[in-house]
Image (tube, rainbow, N blue to C red; front, side, top):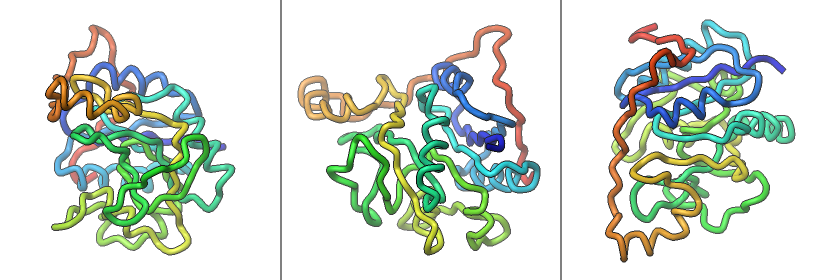
Length: 231
């Protein structure tokens, strides 16, 4: 299997916790591309353009600087891609950072996926894309205006817009066995989601701001290529 390119749109810096888990990802990782650009839609577009222009791998993986990942996340998503060739993109599962901390997967546009399987991959309409493995040909086959696959609209965030724009026959799947943590004052994960009512009613934790970015330890530099505006 060819190397996977990691794409990281890093809008608000990267926490040390997130960097460590990204650094420790196992699997056939080639180059890592990172950009601090805003808005998020343009950051994602720039990284995809660089992926298509400068690499030859069959897959890229989008990550975020405010998430923590299992070290097996990439390997697991690649295995799911092999087992489900109909899946043009596969996501790991993570939870919203605001109450009611629901999983960021949707059965239909704007309709949360309630009662999804926990032990096997399943098809979804749309999702958050901060732990997502994409096949190269998905971007190649999608219609885009000047390399703009991701766009904010009045109704849709950039990731939901992308999912809703995927061409017929190219499916989005979720592998719930790939579990990610959303960084805040706590890690928003499956356990936190299940206990959200307790947290809000008894602790008043209904709005959890993102934790401050932690400075890297001396001599610790993420192995990345900084992508500038317009590249």
